[in-house]
Every structure is written in C-alpha cells, then in structure tokens.
Length: 162
Image (tube, rainbow, N blue to C red; front, side):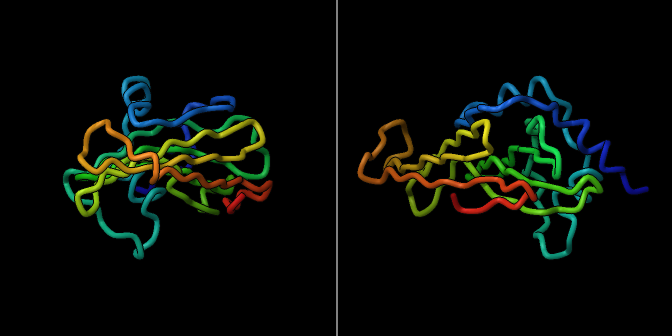
C-alpha cells in the first residue's frame, strides 16, 4: 500500500528560518529524526521512473521542513552515497506532487578533488550557497576555487536562481 504524503511529512519537523547546512549538520538530524522507510523514499524522493535506483549503500536522512509556507511545502533531506553527500531541498504541493528540487549543499569527490558547499536559507526563502575545493581531500581549502551562488523559493514553490 502506498504511504500517504502526511506520513512522509511527519519525518520532517518544521523549523523557522534562518538555517545553515554544513558538512556535519546532518549528524544532528540523524539523531533527532526517524529514518525514511523504503516506501517513503520510492514514493516521494524517487516518484518517477526517470530517477536512478539507489544502491545498498545510499542513505537518506530527513532534516526539516521550512515553517510557515502557505502555497507549498518545502523539505530538506540529506542523501549519502559513496563519495557524494548532498542536502536536497524539495518543494511539494499539499497533495504531495513535486514542484521543484535542488541540491543546495554537500560534499563530493570527483577527479581527485573534494568539493564542499554550505547553504544558508534565510527568512525570505533566499538560499546562499558557498562552494570550494580541496586538492588533497583534507581541510586545506584552495581559496581560488571559492564561489557563491544564490537560489530562492518563489511563493508558488519553484526554486530558481536568485
């Protein structure tokens, strides 16, 4: 039986903005929030056949929902794969239909470089993302790789470039 959207939302406690998502923030959510079931993942994180199936090492941690939205519902989860960790912001209608989805922060390893990004979501649903790389995989950050970008959530739930 297909789980109801309210069961999915129950895993994401509402919090007021602002919030900062960094490399280790998911530990707090992993301790405080119940994990997502396979049925919830397949119905609300991977609702279409277009999405690629996860392997047995992929994990999802529900983080939070953005409090005080009226025309949409916004949630953030943390996805952990081998050498790729990402915070995903997704917006839904109140019936559970996906409106928009974006990776807003995380850590990934590609071609011997570790890329880390952090995100701040403010009270106006504006998202500032800072990103940079480390050539040796440790905490040595190369400041010449630093860049930022901005997203925002519109009142209809669309996530767009800010």
